[in-house]
Amino acid sequence: MKAIGMLVIIWGHAFPTGLTAYIYSFNFPMFFIVSVYLFKQEASMRIFFKKNLYSLIIPYLLLCLIKDFSHITKYWNNFQELINCPIGILTGFHTFNDAPAAKNLWFVYTLFLLKVIFQISGNKRSNVILLFVAAIVGAVTLSHYNIHLDWAVTNTFSAMPWFMLGYIISSKYNIGFERVVSRIKDKKYFAIATFAILTTLLLFISAYNGEVRMFKGYYGHSIILFLIFGLIGTISIFMLSVSLDSIRSKAVQIISIGTMVILEFHRDLYHPFGKIVNNISDGIVSEGLLSLTASAIVLLLFIPIIMILQKIFPIILGKRKIPTNE
Image (cartoon, rainbow, N blue to C red):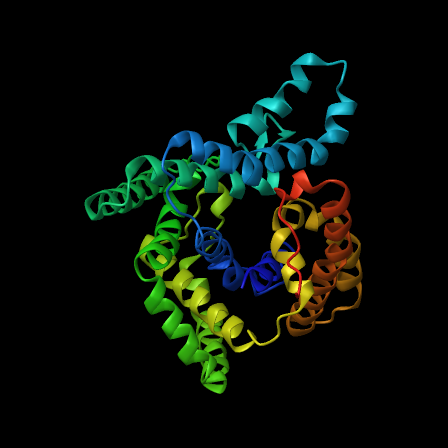
């Protein structure tokens, strides 16, 4: 599901005409659910930070610095301009005073903050309910006053419900969830049909919620529609993923351990393909299909990059290893 989710995120950043409302209605909500699925509270904050230091914090800092390297070298002798970059990275801004900062890795910063909140709060039902209510109130309040900062901290409000959903499924209903997955695997045609129906439905109704841009805290016209549409899109991709579960290729495993690298640099790789798509597409349908194909090619191009990084620079992948087939 992570690999398909990454494909959808790349496709979303291609901004295909007529499809952006559909893609953005669920792409990052789905990724928050998937990313938190294996999260568990640690025995102490010390263990928690040690674990996340290598899996999230160090890769985040390294990838941001590499991404922003050209800006750093350009303004190396201008302290006032130069300092904007590290400040933005450390505080989780997408950009800071027009200087590049976290950029696409705002997602990682927000994910880490959510993990900290859940590590501190515990898993009591009352705490979970309180966090959910606080997140909804916070998101609605920011939207009401038109406060839309490209800041990972404020994005925790709109991201919290999706984090909570993934956490609840994995921690409270893991066994039941596995049973559901097992049953769906036995009914692949049902899963594919469900994916097709839900995708078609979301294509037609997603525009009713307007613009969704989670990196700025935009959830559209309605927080309720944001939650409903995000859930529909996530379920549709889940159904597709389960139906394709028998295809356990090494490529999918490689993509899964390199999602942070892909997230940070996919727009750079897509740029030349985007020019080709714009030149040869002659309508909404062709643009959508061509941009999806180009996104898939970009995703595949990351496979050798991730394999090389895993051998020579594993810390940038959070020391994650490519699973063997043995």
